[in-house]
Amino acid sequence: MHELVITPLSLVFSFSLVLIAMGVSYKENLGLNKELIISVIRMVIQLVIAGYLLTYVFQWDSKLVTIAVILIMIINAAYNASKRANGIPHAFKISMIAILAGTVIAIAILVISGTLLFTPSQLIPVTGMLVGNGMGIIGLTFRNLTMLYRDKHQSVNEKLALGATTKQASKEIIQETIKGSLQPTVDTVRTVGLVTLPGMMTGMMLAGALPMEAIMYQIMVFFMMISTATITSVISAYLAFPYFFDQAGRYVGVKK
Image (cartoon, rainbow, N blue to C red):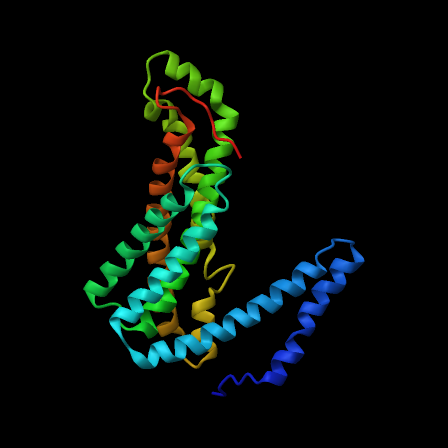
């Protein structure tokens, strides 16, 4: 079996794929070329820096450093997720609690069971996948919650007028919010192996791992993603919905 070898020259040639995207953007007048170039440059710089830092972290093999790196990842994800809050107060705190809870629970179970070792080379890459997924889930949760309250505020007010608590009046909205936020994850899990081959599994096979070994690792990651996505969505929805009401329990919505 030939090992995959990537050189700087091969990366230069692969940049032609970005040029194709830019050509399409130019032809269709999409106005994305500047954003594409900036995004590609940022991606390359960030990944190179991350590569050098992770090399030292992996060699250091310190539990404290590993925890510090994971916390930095979670804080950064929470900050980016909070920017999609559409005016929901304390979005950073909500995002931080939700991502932290979802990630820590999943990681803790697998470390305690011996499935993962408490080493930076295992914990940091897996945590990165979970945190990134949690960040996207929270963005969907905030958006769905805002849209559903806007569309169903009359129904909420009617329930409140009949004596329902804010939680009772919001139950249907919270359920639809969580369901909508989890749908992309459910769709991905449903079609994996038939429609898509996940990145981690593909990367391991390109690196020379046996297909069944790569598949077992990928199954483990999807189990973690399902758990993290569910916990993150539920926590963020239940922490965010009270801010659509005032202290007297009246629906007021949120201001962007």
